[in-house]
Length: 454
Image (cartoon, rainbow, N blue to C red):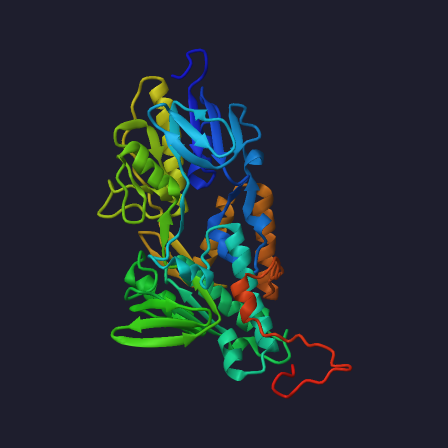
């Protein structure tokens, strides 16, 4: 221990599902817990796409960390960014705070977008991992309809009403279904020069089917549902270039170009920079996405008091592939580490971590979802109903549960999206694409036809 007159110091980096559940499970443990995060709130990421599509507001799916841990007398929260760590001296280096010593370190900093070496695409195809991402995506989606309403050129108007989603996993499927509902229901009758229902939603997946982690029958049902709702699904299609208003796709040996002003990225993730730091400082192995290869107890090889959990961890000790980066995995890993720490304090050991997989859920839209419960596969309304209650159950605070339930209930009957606000300043790239309808008074001013503004 660092000092014999103090309780063991447990430091947790990251207040997501993994880190927060570890902290919560240590509430009554004889340790001092320090939770460090650069954000002061926990974000319920599975519903982030609903912020991006105007169903929910950011506050509906976010909870302040200090509020969650208010009654944890052994826990303090530090709002700062971890920039380095020293596993030999057992210290965490922060950006604007003295080094924090630890006896046990838990790293749960998650992942970010991965553009597979094409980071310049980010300017045209935003991803969805943070509240800022969601608000930016919401602005881009709803601003596209506004721009189409002002556009006089039919081809440009069509480009504004074309939405391309890259990646056919759960996030891509959810976005495609939600934007279809926006176009066909939520915005119906709101415009005078365009019909939002004319919007074209294109979902691109590189593999041979949507929802690759799911069983083929559920993938097929998801695709059929999306197609029936007007989504164009392209499988075995690889995006080779993205520009401000053009997406280039390779399907087999054929090159296709799609004129679209709105491109949304849901194709891949890469580890946070903590993965690289741990690899350098603890000589840990990382996979191609930068995730840390962990031992069967989620520790880093050679450092039994350094744990990596959640999306940042590559746990390959169960089955023939790593555990998926989903909330239930993170929650169970967080609780496991808390139990392991307490066992070690009394000189006991704990069996290696084993993930208990209750199944997978993906929503397609209102009254439509697919669920793999292992013993049974469900789709349609029943699957959607289970998805709704499962997500309400896992929300952190009661007020979030109540607000989301009321919002969903209201939206179900009205087909409205009360949070469809266009807020913040558009990026320079997006702003440059919006049709310029400004004009200057021509009083006492004569312009030639070549330079006159219309």
